[in-house]
Image (cartoon, rainbow, N blue to C red; front, top):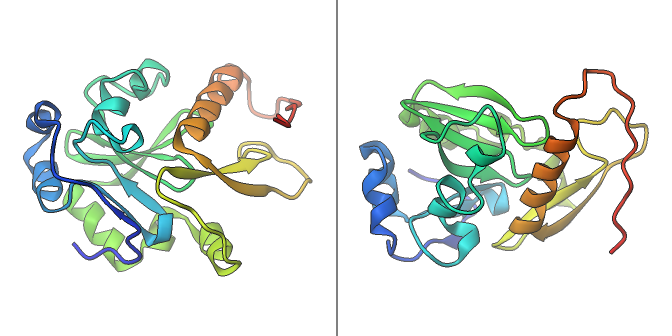
Length: 201
């Protein structure tokens, strides 16, 4: 696998218990690189480590930040093996790869196998993951460091005339705000008018 723009590579495997629970095809990848951040921050593949927590696959699969505990579309067996720079989650469900839209909780099929996912990621990653806007940010010298995601305001799910702003915040902060947004709007029908108060802290 050849992913451009590596900004972080995971250390050696320290969480063997989680590693042993993974399907063989994911074990093979993590045995070569125990997770990484590529595309200059555009994609993050989690590793089997205890620290740092933002890189821990266990934390977001079975730990205190498990996605299945919040998102109704995610099962306990689903493996959140990675994410994009906005916090959209890459989910391995049996042999298929899905993307979890973390604002709405919708699960969309991305590829029919993990092998197909890696192949598409190598060929045309920006288009495949829908990261054209992020590519534009990079051209404006936007800097995304390991352990950070992009916070977008207003959220993508809101049809707003206001121009969106983007800033780098911690992985924990971004995912927490996405979960809170999802829980607040998940029962609203399409077209509902909502007002979001911007946190100025």
